[in-house]
Length: 202
Ligand code: MP5
Image (tube, rainbow, N blue to C red; front, top):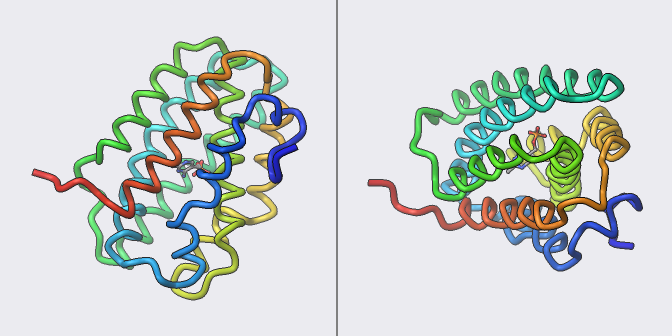
């Protein structure tokens, strides 16, 4: 058993990547209040771009989901729409524009979502369950953090988000394309790396 990974998924998830994705130095720095502002702001605007890509993927997944999965996925889509408003508000508070060029890590993750879009439903929902679970556990690791980062930690550690993640765990169909699960974890690690060390944009 890997800590934080639901039993159902633990055979699917590679432990070294799980640890790298959920205990990343970015998260240590957030918890300690030592994150450079530029790194945090890079993460924020790039994650807003990621969430827009995720909404496209998830809306399509909802369209092909079995009846029993529709409510959870529809709720997730609505939450992503609200989250895009939240990102816009946070960007305004920090005087950031969301009209930025995607970093290579963001583009890479978008390409992975496009491939998941054409993967069989079972593999795609499992990848989504891992994508959300890893984010919950990552921000739990950064908790409680002090201001001004605490509200970001709280955003992804609320009981409501944990319930959503548990519901996705219940929909996951492990035992399929384990390489896609590993790719999700790699994309998560690369995303945190990117925030700490963004590529210069031309
Ligand atoms: C999520 C996210 C979780 N916001 N960013 C990355 C890089 N991975 C996962 O998605 P959500 O829907 O915002 O909880």
